[in-house]
Length: 148
Image (cartoon, rainbow, N blue to C red; front, side, top):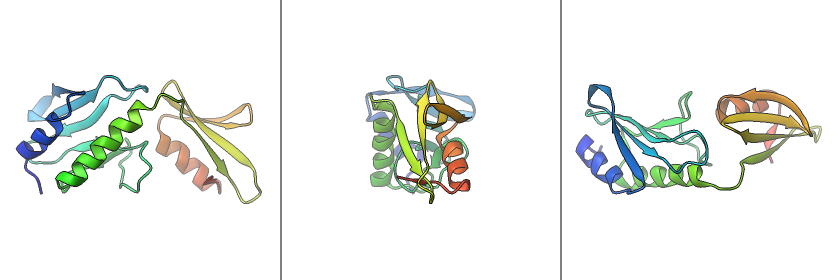
């Protein structure tokens, strides 16, 4: 496991991330060029080595919390750099996010990120709105839909 200082050195090597000191010695690193209303790439990096990276939009099987963050406590340097790069990339995409889901009856729904809301559309009709991508995908999975 990397120490706080080692993690800090790795994260500070990303010039596009801006450091923000928060309470209890914790540190956030923000990506101010994010195309959605999420700027924290690294959240609450703590002197004990615990911390989180925003991974909600990454197409990888990370164990995410309810805020779309992955815990980086036990990450080595390679894994930490990988998730940070993926997080920055996911926040840099210029094209609007849109994803199609389909159920066994071949009905399709789309998830579209609209102004920091995750909307589910059936054609042109708004079916549901969620604050997070995970919330939207959980709903679709419960309804029998799978990513196309």
